[in-house]
Length: 263
Image 1 (cartoon, rainbow, N blue to C red):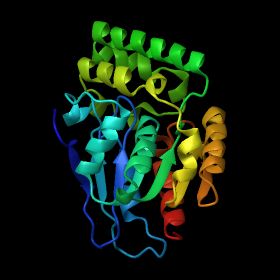
Image 2 (image 1 turned 90 degrees about the horizontal axis):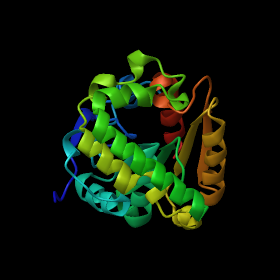
Image 3 (image 1 turned 135 degrees about the horizontal axis):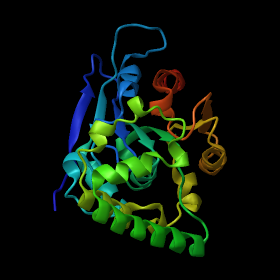
């Protein structure tokens, strides 16, 4: 088993500010962030030319970490060994990883940004049902292959507002059926012990980002902020759904950067 995850600088730093660490969602890779990563690096509150570094991570089962098979707790351990201290930005599955990392290794998280994230499914029966659904989906990926599955996956209502040109399909195609299936079986939402009761232990500045057209995750975002406490804030991206960093990359990056400059 590797002792680290694959990382790559998406934008070099021109100053000594803590870098952004980007944790992608299911079926993505570190190359699937598109213009969002550049906007995030370039935007500073006073528009000076300094760039905050942006480090992408391939999470287990994805990209160049495709052969890494580990659960969420194990992912947090590998991640802590793979990144410098920085502002951790997690989207969807990556947000759940970010929560585990922050709770287990707060020393590497100088700030936390959670995009379209949940802290887990409360009800045990609902959680078991989701785990069974993910197991069936993992079997399906292994049967039909990555290309067919990605067409089906991106056709889901969750991605209705996502322009195909911004979906990062080429980067997603770099994944393997075995890797994606392993990710679902080990890190799917149904496998996760809910973290809601642990969230008050998070003490770093936290920003929760949701799309205005994603009512489910807007509600979850409000709950995240309430559970974490006074140092957590919520921002809503207008005319965006679940995939705000891809649907509205400039607006999402600007909202994040402007908030972080006040930390």
